[in-house]
Picture (cartoon, rainbow, N blue to C red):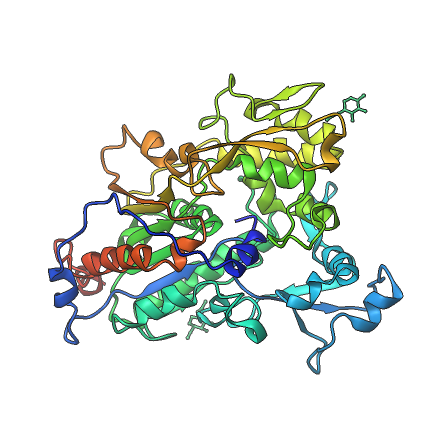
Length: 447
Ligand SMILES: *[C@@H]1O[C@H](CO)[C@@H](O)[C@H](O)[C@H]1NC(C)=O
Ligand SMILES: *[C@@H]1O[C@H](CO)[C@@H](O)[C@H](O)[C@H]1NC(C)=O
């Protein structure tokens, strides 16, 4: 999620014995998966920080320091592109500052949209392939591995990259906006994703697609579904599997905005990256949502005041990020007001029973100092109420299939690596593939 923690979690390889609380499926689904059965194409939508991002500096760019210009980046291609996210080298303090400066987004009130830092162009590489989702820094595959273990497990079912298995990398710093607000980068991503869904289906005899998201990717995917007509969803979407989706935001995000998040690495000073993290539109999208964090629950406590999810504007002002108030009120609040049911089958899989920040206590020293934290249930990053939000939101929806699988002791990113978690995800994919009740090829014969 706050993408940036992806690294830290990856660096600390955790092996936790787990008890799976979900009722395991029988194995016949696996056995059914022989070579004769056609597989539904799968598209992976990563979380924030979950794919590589490339950048190029134009003549308008002004470096923060001489050092920055000379030593970062060390390698560029002929056209000046370099991998900005991620490069292990930026963990060196002077470079961290420079990196954060280039990664920062700005909200432009005149055009009512977010934009890159002046003189910085960005792009994702290999849209459609899983390549840029596997590792964040290919020079350090082991410690920056992201979706590699999941992709490998999926490939063992017979899936092949760019044939029936696809990846949808995006510029995860940007979010989406409600209708009536410009949102160039986010809506372009949704259009590309829509075309990828159609292409994936067309390339596989018209079989509808299984969407598998992680974290923030789930919020984008739900928007994709709800922004396309029911007939489109029926033709192209078989199932939506959302892993670790922070439907109702997180308290952890308030910590990121107030005091920065150290890229998950103890050596990095969180204040060096705080400004960049505050600028991110998708981070703002993940502020605690009112329905999951009720009025009477204090999320942040200081000697001066107390803040609940109803006080986010005042919180942004008090931490010294008043620029965030207008986009939060006009773009984020209306966007998160409703989590509409897409009427395609949805499975939420997530960890629970991991200590997750629930209340932040700041002392006299203010927000520059890391707070004392009271922990509650969740996946270590996302609070349990947020992970469970769809159950509550859709309880009266008659035509919405929703299945929830909880994995005890599995953390937010470990869900993509832990063997027990991977087995559950693969089992769910196999079950979906062996479901002929709504035959995958009905839709193709109807065309
Ligand atoms: C979809 O396929 C068309 C035709 O092959 C191609 O031009 C386009 O780039 C593809 N789009 C995506 C998002 O895969
Ligand atoms: C509380 O208020 C004092 C005085 O206005 C200020 O110096 C301090 O930074 C504030 N602390 C917090 C955590 O808001």
